Image (cartoon, rainbow, N blue to C red):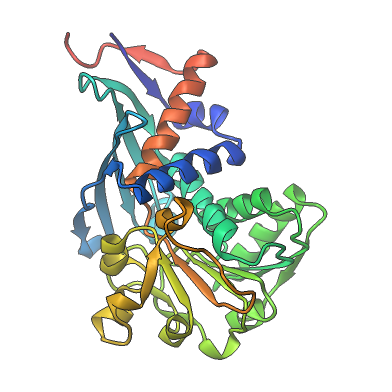
Length: 333
């Protein structure tokens, strides 16, 4: 047996259809909701002097027989200091029957795509069904796949308002995304409140450690996809928004440890009991999603290893179908 090595270029060749990624990620959440996954807590190494961290993320989806381990970093200063992406990852897909490494692949695009897909799935169940206006707070790599997923799920989006602390990042984002979605009106927002005003879905994708979105800017019926807060100390929303909202997490323990709710819970502003439930429970039909048009809903995403595993399996299957990648004798047999 040989292990399939898939480079970033290889993964990019096969992982272009956000719709397929959304399908497998939604399935992964459903399996979690039904209690059919093994997913130990992320293991963190903190590189404080470099303003970064490294995480190991194992998982096994029992019914689907898919297992994988991902190693992923987060270094917000990478682009400016080293010309490298903020997030990079390597993933090993394993055969549960034998433990043999079926594939070793670049996980950077995979991580971005599966995280975008999670936002799309969350909005499908928690946002009002015909959103017209989307606000993007943050205009980096993740903002691209988040919008891609929303545009895949919803065919009613007419306007995208964009705010980033970097005007250059905002301009670059709008230049790129307006070409991809020519029928959509892209607007530069001067501040976060201007971006949020009248929006149906607000997506936050920043590494902020203090609230960016003010409670005074929030209106009834809005849905938030909070993507940036994925480690202890990070937060993007005024906690007063959470006190008014139906809060849905991807995973209770990860969410409390490092999601949008981690700081408000640690400070006693909200309680664990204020979290409505996990997204997987909603997808599995165990709990309701959006119940009223005027509800404020918040999805706090920390990124789950099961999302990586099912997306890696999709990449592996497509690569084998298309004869992409290099088969290597990595493990002695």
